[in-house]
Image (cartoon, rainbow, N blue to C red; front, side, top):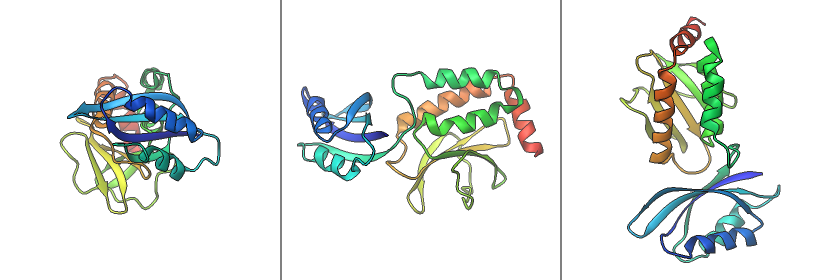
Length: 211
């Protein structure tokens, strides 16, 4: 199984090597490392690891937090294949999807962001949702002016984003792991900017709103 591990560690030579050794001792094989931020002698990394089925997440956390200065922010499942360029693949599919461009985007976002589900909403109701979206989800009352990360009751982590000039908003949900990082919010913002510039976007939205 693939897992995403987000941790904070000292930003000094050898710190990542210690993390790598601890993960290896716990039976995890590192497939990708993404540095989310650095500063004030600390770094925040997302590490994708392959673990045999049945690997204890608690043991992974225990092994990592035994290292001096290392704190684990979260461990959660991911479906994003390491070493690929998923945004480019998804944008290729979207450009050929015609009236299904928006639904193709929504179905793809959970994989891109190691999230559980995504949805579009209008006037307080869900218009379209990907697989695994909760049936009883309450749409936030206000749509933010720009994509925003938040955590709602029950510990559900969200990115809520407007889709101007469309009469929709986008919601991305993650129930496990840490809150969405500002780098993830920025990544989604850029993807939406490209999507909204595509000629098929307005036709796709009109098709969804007619349902």
